[in-house]
Amino acid sequence: MRPSFTPIGVLRKCQVMLALPEEALQDIAANSKMAAANRGESLWIKGKDVDFFVAIAAGFVKMTRSTSQGVDVTTEIFGPDQVLGMLGTIKGSGCPQAAFAVCETHYLRVSKERFLPYYRENMVLKDHLIGRTSDRLTRAHAMLTRMSTSRVEVRIAQVLLVLAESYGEPTPTGTILTVPLTRQALAEMAGTTVESAIRVMSEWQKRGVIVTKSKHIEILQLAQMEALLD
Image: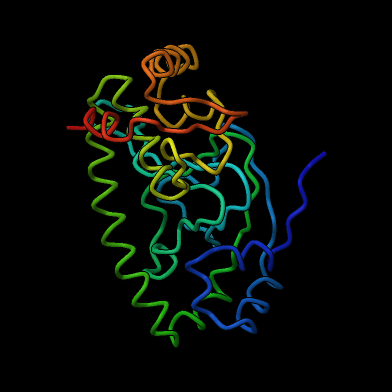
């Protein structure tokens, strides 16, 4: 049974959109449409000009950039209740990177035309996005470097730490990811095979670095995982 989402419900759960008043959210929602993408399906390709940006309801999307060797590398990861493509909307530019679903993903195609007038008159939203963009660029640069040159363990650690930053909640024993994550999705984000992802995760479980609970990953040794990135 496919999950059911409404445009206004999706917008209300996106933190970045909550700087807008309810009447603005209602208007934007009325002119936006729900969509779904299967694993590997593109939401848009690099350079394409689209009339929407994305608010994710369920699933994950990776942004990719091609290296000089022609290899597509993950630079950013977005999940439930997050927004992507907003910067291109504001700048009026095409998509600087490609976006692909890493698993079955449900998302809202937010109308650029409806959103922009509200953005232009909302200083709170503008200030929030300025800070958000600076942080994103810094993280994306670091992720591009690690994902294009590092061994599999480092790439998987990078993905888990990025997800922990957005979806991690403290527990008595560590930090648990509140969103379900399959080995297939993790492998897609890290740019590796499912077999390699399973090997790395199994080794970490044996060493007490992580534990999995019904598709939810708990990081027990956060410092040890962070040390892999040094």
